[in-house]
Image (cartoon, rainbow, N blue to C red; front, top):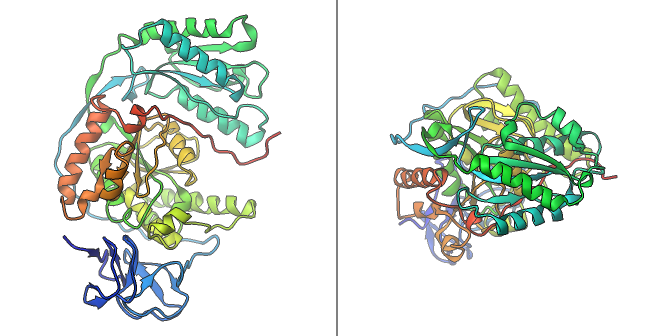
Length: 492
């Protein structure tokens, strides 16, 4: 097993895979100071102003002379990024191959042609004021009826739906409407208060096509006992969905979100490349993956732009990236205030370092489409969508785009889950072992234990088992289910 990795032949740094002490040797270079695991060591003398190269690309420049064997990190490195850029389309498509693994999943066929990996009964709250009532309905319904014929009864609290204007109001409504039509829900009760901005009448009028036999609406202020009425409506929905059966379908029916959080220096070496290989596998088998986290594309966006399927898609990526930078500037915030303290402790030095590792999740296939925030998936293959890096908002947005699950890589560890199954993939074995109650899969096995092809095969099997209901994710087992809706403007 190697104790370090040089990711690209062009790199002037190596990443150590275990803590190194002063005097040890990395690729023939004597280490001049202690280097923490997943951090970088200089392979040559690097002059002030010279670029630090990792993944074959600059991740910043040296702010002082760095002798070979020294620790390369925040104390001597700074980002090269700055402001909004102009871009040109220079397509660069890879000849992508993948393992041969014909797989099927057992899923729920929905009336609109989509497929759910769960058959859950949901309460979608139009406004935060009815969270208590929604929780009471779920609690009383489960106490009164046996719900073992379905995959669960859930409601998802949020603070919005009132005191919002303009784009924020529309965004909240759009997110909730997309949840109402999500294929993982076999039945949905839409619950309003009555006096909120997010009015039930406008919500229904703009909802578009939906399955009326599996959707009910209730305004709390219009009935005497809203909890009893809600339980009655939940029972009606349960009676419709309790006989639903899984049917066998090709893996191409899956729509999978790609996300990372609590990243470390191993993220771009193990877990994110594994998701990239999985994304390629899905694309080449007719499936769909969706990558968000636009601020964590900054510094690597040129690689995604070169993979745009055509010039129109390229311009969509340019708008995706630059519009998010403008969003930062409109709020007088620094565009490149990233990585986080946890990222830095884990070995990530600059945003370019983080982004080049983050975008490994996208694999190597063409970018087929770019979605606006709240927009639903139209195209198979790799999609990009507008989300912030924030874990809860990004995961909610991926689910509202139509993803039935999210794959979430983490090096530091995180317990949360979205309103759809959230598969936690560890970047390193130590964290996977320590937080086994959070982690679903250990990509740290790539370091000296398994080949990428072997691990990818195991990972595809796991995803098929989760999609088919044979296994639950840790967030499902722990009952960690949350939503968070993007907000830009003022609150009244």
